[in-house]
Image 1 (tube, rainbow, N blue to C red):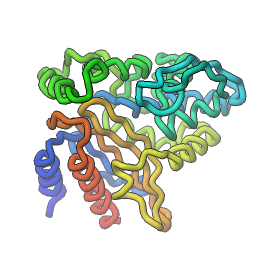
Image 2 (image 1 turned 30 degrees about the vertical axis):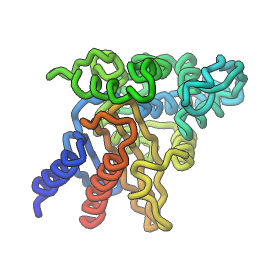
Image 3 (image 1 turned 135 degrees about the horizontal axis):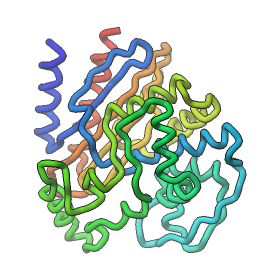
Length: 300
């Protein structure tokens, strides 16, 4: 079967699960890749924490920042339901190093915003440009991701927020929900995030200490429900970051095989099903990512 036919079949299977997705899988050794709509700008949700963490770790590596420096993080909201400092009842003092770990391992929005106050969006963008990664835009703090219509509705009305998310998109990818509007929110493409992972796994333009630390934190991610079931194994390590917001379900990472192969996998998806919990969509996205991964592996 040709790659084009294979990708059409994957697109069809995703559509049957209510998903529209951008996928890119790349062998970081040979450079061979398979891509499905990988250049479509998409709201990045928590995937935007990847370039922020890299920018901070780069400054720790070259001495501009001290990783041990304590940072005061304001109190959060215990009722918010998100992990980490966003639920803390009182202000806390946390080192820059540990804020990076929290932002990556449990996707702590409060930790990520503390980092963004240290290295603002313009500097994050400049760092991406310097390593040749284009197509990622960091524009606003992560506290904004907790201020969508979903947070203003009772749990039994969550489907209304998802219906707005699904139906509100314009042909130019605008949206009345600003966190889903590609002109106003943090965005990226599957190709851009694959390029970032490629640079980090090859130390290309990235300080080796910063790259090594980022890889280690991604290996320790505790959010393992999306692609990990399909990509983890006894002889393979899945190092990744997820992103979830309303009807968005993303994950970007690298499968490190025992034989030395390194396969970058980026999946950015938008669901047309008005529900918060969608195990079928998660399973379909994982199966699609695995199918592209296996085809790349078989071609080595």
